[in-house]
Amino acid sequence: MAIRPIVRYGDPVLHAPAAAVETVDDSIRALLDDMLTTMYAAPGIGLAAPQIGVPLRLIVIDLSVGEDPAQVIKLVNPEVLEREGEQKHEEGCLSIPGYAGSPTRPARVTVRGLGPDGDERVYTATELLARAFCHEIDHVDGFVFVDRLSPLKRDLVRRKLRRRAREGWEE
Ligand SMILES: [Zn+2]
Image 1 (cartoon, helix red, strand yellow):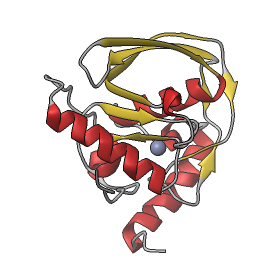
Image 2: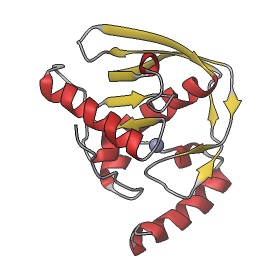
Image 3: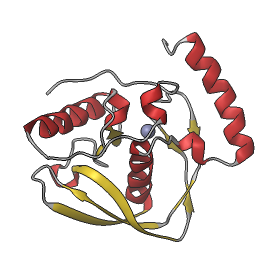
Image 4: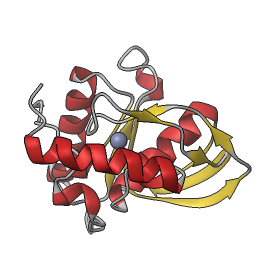
């Protein structure tokens, strides 16, 4: 398991849809492990493969950030089956350090994907877990939370981020 560099806003891999995984094999399982290690090191509660520069539909989520193995979610080809209601809370993103925003998300989602064993997994989530699923599935669709803000805020933040991306993200 290795910590991979996290790519930042402005990198094309974050702004294009990722490809579906055809076979859940050892290389995919190794990638999911690297994603989890990278996420814990950041630290964060969710990470999608495009964030480590890999254009595949893979996400990991752990609201306990390594404290509770039962909360680890590794999902291949995740998709939102159902969404219901609305919620709005502040989100950040490991690929957009120093920025936060409050996109509108569904209050409740049903998500389907494949686990590391290749078997189907279905999750129903509310509150923070629903937001995390939507945030990470957005990443594999080529969207970041900024794209989900109101038009006025979105344009303001995008202008700042483009400048940041041009000048380099080095802190
Ligand atoms: Zn993110």
